[in-house]
Image (tube, rainbow, N blue to C red; front, side, top):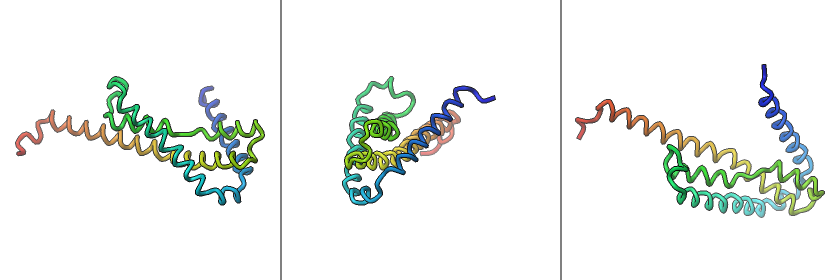
Length: 153
């Protein structure tokens, strides 16, 4: 039997997808093409500035916040978490305020979609880094505890 929590999560995801489909139907493709370079600059600043602050915060936070990962992986994780946008929330807010047809709204949504594209890739990169670091640590511990490499000079 499916738990109510999973069922609710499923419907939330379907609603977000429907909202994005509605949003894509309303976006003016001609406007996006015309403002592509501007949208790329807005998106880059929307990614890089929060990521820099997140990485900076991750490097200065005490070690007890980091867990088992290293400081670099934790800082990258925090930086990525800071730069991910919430395009469904932005779209719903603009729709509710009847501002979806404005140029600045189209620019905001376009930049948000570019941010979200990177937002799906960057957590995978950080997760792979954390996993690789943990596997390397386990391998090193295993080699040390087995005595392997003691005779190697």
